Length: 237
Image 1 (cartoon, rainbow, N blue to C red):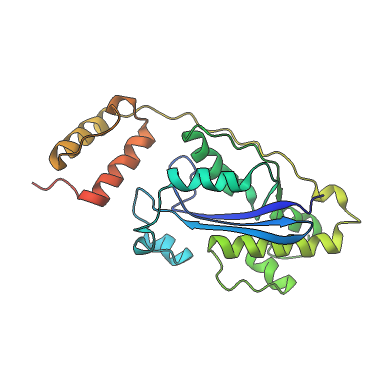
Image 2 (image 1 turned 45 degrees about the horizontal axis):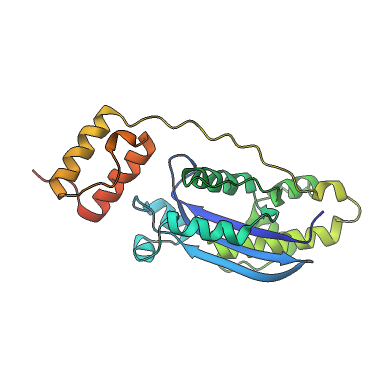
């Protein structure tokens, strides 16, 4: 059981940690069951945010245009997180993205975690839905901006505290923090097609890359191509 933790949530451009990007991180630090510190930041992705993601989160390309990159934001957030226990609703999803992107920056993430979705399933098998929205409705928690990282993190923390007060003493084992097993998929090397297109793209826009093209992974190349197209445009014949 824990009353000291960081409740967190992220918003992303998709569901695949190895291919998609983080566009928002929100978190609330709790000590002895009380909120003491917060973290919130939008992140500018390399690729454009799709209309579907904007529909879900309300985050637009215009909103992130002047924001910092993941390379800048993630180290800052991981410093905020420290070695604290992570709490999230379906926390493995958040962990997988943070783990993959930390790995790319040669940083470690091995914090233990508590999943409020797991708690909801264990403590409330009678509920038809145990989504964060459904659980907030059941517990009377007001989440004014669902699917925004900070608001969902705050709602998740409130949900955890309410479930803890209701079941913490009688079902202590359910509230124990556990490590999350997530194996990062091995990244493939840049493809021949990507090399040719990236070479053509950099020559067309007169861009000098800071790294050799051959050193890029397939995912790195894809993100870089998306970033160049977003900032400079496609090759026009």
